[in-house]
Length: 485
Image (cartoon, rainbow, N blue to C red; front, top):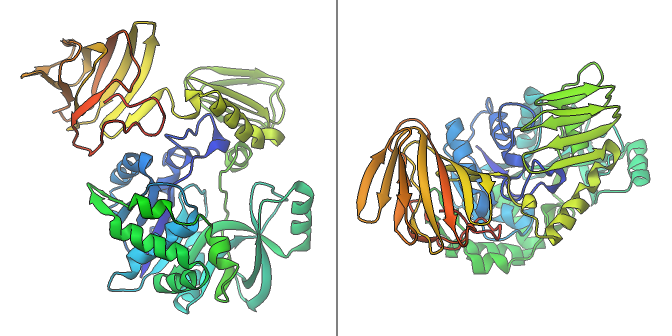
């Protein structure tokens, strides 16, 4: 039996401004109609004896993960919420401890949620080969034979070949961090290195045994965190105090470099971690001028470039080997060979407390989404969409009043002691301090315009009295700007 373990954490800052901390790249549709998370699960179709997946994610992203799984009709074994980032070794320790407690001792297939693989048949055949080694007690990682001196990937140095077959299998000599360009050239020319894919396979009990031998403090902390944890709606919350005390380390250095049981199987497929705009250009379908274009774009004398328009017309003249990315609240422009510096740019914006590093103009919530349309000193206009059968929290505000106008669908409004229906072109006024709730009792999305007025219009002016999603006052997704409901 194979249990997929999907690592869906991470902030994806190298793909800013599309990727933001509240909605990072693994949840975006970057190459086709599916998000990267959905594609990661989809490419498993066709594998035999596949158990429901275990997903690990940041608590902030839990409702995004649940919704994207619901869209696919995937019922996970668990969605585990990490209260803090502690790298891959603790995350996989949690997954292995959960899996080892079941009747079978499954093989865990560890997959980051943000990779792009076109040749899914080749990927699945490699997984089958890796599973055979995992069943024999090996800890398997998948290496990518490099075709260029990439500085954005980690590398693995090959040890002795295990056997003469395709795809090749080697012992693991060592893991190395992302190199500079000259070192990367030496790695590729030597033929002794593979790119580190971050994908693994091993039996749950074997991994726990090896981790116990090489990093016992991680196992101990994760056992305590699981014992302290609790089920919460569709999620499992790890115990915060134990998990935050866990040492932070990657599986590469905590286990794989130290174990005698590690092997590397060459991935018999294309692979791209979509970790930069350059990677997206390489993976994209190109026009006759080798441009990758998304959205409403008009180009003249532009070659070998990536141009992305999300909300308006983007035009360019005379650009060669550039990246241009437009969103509703930010524009990013850089030569392709300098796109890795976007991380430094994002760090600079964070030091300025710019909300553009945190969220998009359109902010997603478990009940739907909202988007700022217009703002002034004492008023704020929002566009709100509520999913069918969803409801916002029962709440009140100390500093603002609200006026709701229904554009599409049906709204069930709670205002103080009264409850009433609003249909299209009807409106309601919510006075300052009045307890209220908005629901969508219908079968189609509810769309409305909200006009806020008052002396203080920030999103942290909310007191929740009841919430069907288990959120609490002050839980605003970690953005420092609160949450509208």
